[in-house]
Amino acid sequence: MPSPMGVKRFWGWLGEKVGGKGMTQCIFLIVASLIVATQIIGCSLLGPVFDGYSCGNAAARSDLQKITLKELVKNGWPEETTPLIQTRVTYPEDVSKNIPDYKCRALLHAKVGERGYESFTFAVYYNYDDYKVTDYKSDFTKYQRMKIADMLSGKMEPLAQKAKVCTQKEKAEGCEDGRDRLH
Image (cartoon, helix red, strand yellow):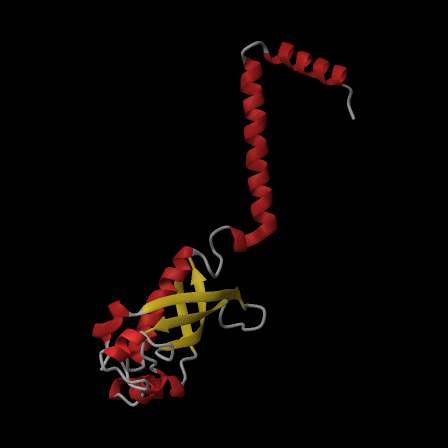
């Protein structure tokens, strides 16, 4: 470790060479070059995961929420109700090592109603470039398409009726357990 006297001598020598006011400028240039060097080294070591091209950054999540709605409509959900659907993106990950056709994978969630069973979850494999999803493949299943058809035809209502439990206030107003409070 250099002695404090040696450090003081070095700065004194540097001050003589650069000259009074130039010393401040020299320190500024040294600090600026260190910051630039750490950014260059950091980005090259950490790679694209940390520089905005990751599978789960804000731009990718925004695109995936739009894809969630697009997939629901494509599989039979009425388009006019899409503004009411709550969407969520979870577990975005890089799968390029295992799946050569796609770089990323994420789970997409869509809540289409108030009840717990009125929701869908499916995976999407996608490629991501220049801050947008370029292409994707959904694993929306035929059973989920059948669930959409059942929900739209009213066949899911018995589930809601069995799950209904009235509050004391509702019972006083004539509500019966096992009846759907919305109908």
